[in-house]
Length: 98
Image: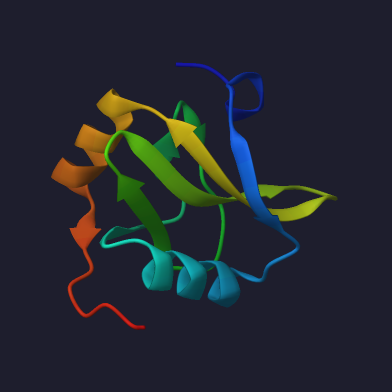
């Protein structure tokens, strides 16, 4: 794939803690999955406090992205293939918290 920073993305939030990003995704997105740190997304391994929660809306993927020395960003990137891969390999979160 390539580096996340080279893709077109929207920054939904920045400066969130991992628990805050997890809560945001679980609250705002119906389709959410848990993945382990180190799981690759768009070719980059994600780092963070487990479980890392990923939101999917159609072919858009919403996830926390840690940029060392800059903090955690909540990104949204279009990626149908990656969304399908997460649907197949991630653990679906079923008890949505609102």
